[in-house]
Image 1 (cartoon, rainbow, N blue to C red):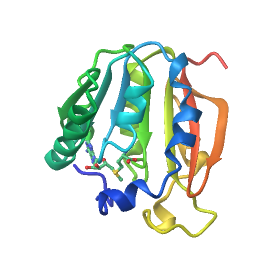
Image 2: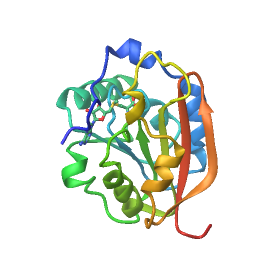
Image 3: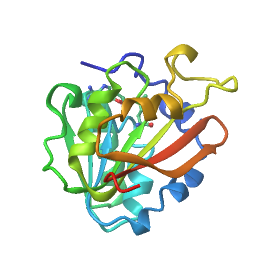
Length: 192
Ligand SMILES: C[S@@+](CC[C@H](N)C(=O)[O-])C[C@H]1O[C@@H](n2cnc3c(N)ncnc32)[C@H](O)[C@@H]1O
């Protein structure tokens, strides 16, 4: 099942809606050990800059063949060799990755729907202890030029409600990622 309202506008326009270096910096990729997993690569807006910052494997997936193809072409042109692709419906069949195998999982612009708990469960299952689920989404407190309906957008409270009972906790890292997004990081392991 494709996430509601997860279609993409034209690529250059989409990429212009983020301060990509700021977001990559916030991820602190250099301190992540283990594979990095991305749910819904879209145009590879974050796949490439993440893969450039690490020698670890980056496993990315999307339900749309066109998105996988576009991102695969970008990766090919960049010469990066640490990205693996999977065309799949993560809501239906998960990531297919082993439990406790990932260092970080990226859930970017994909948690604005009622089934978000399924993706958070998959994050909780696949992350190693101490691994990080990094979430970004459109802000609700300002007008933004794109993004799902305001009443569908999650905020940090929505995410915290959705991880109740999962092996994930908020690690204190939440911030506005100007211009239009907020981010929060959840850590695997109930040791907070
Ligand atoms: C709004 S886009 C965000 C893309 C990218 N994460 C970003 O922030 O630039 C959401 C992406 O998730 C993909 N997607 C939607 N439902 C999915 C599913 N069930 N399994 C895997 N990918 C999915 C869409 O095809 C789309 O490329």
